[in-house]
Image (tube, rainbow, N blue to C red; front, side, top):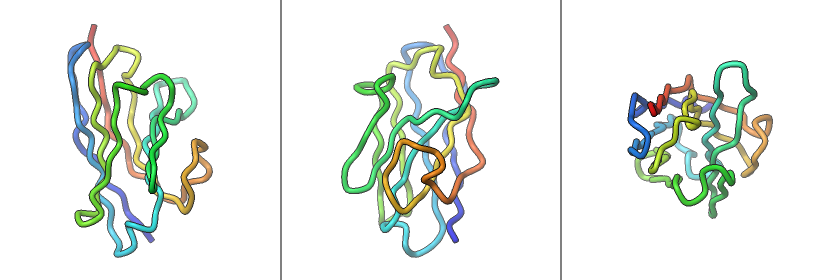
Length: 119
């Protein structure tokens, strides 16, 4: 069992930056692929980025967002730069056995953290 707790969301102006954190419980954190998804009101959950031994990004965030992990701290991060109003969403952290862009590939989810980007 893995529990995930996100933090770091908030309100930021367009062009600004935020760093999200996701703290995981459990001793086998390093064995999991970790990912960030986001979901805006009325929309489906959308892949943002994932990391195992390598990384993958959605085209919409490539070059602006960076996913990283610190296995010693059981934490995964999402550094978000050059934020746009369309990045406004609830951001979710997820853990799974395999790196994937599909939400159903992940077994564990956090509660989400709101990111709002004003224009």
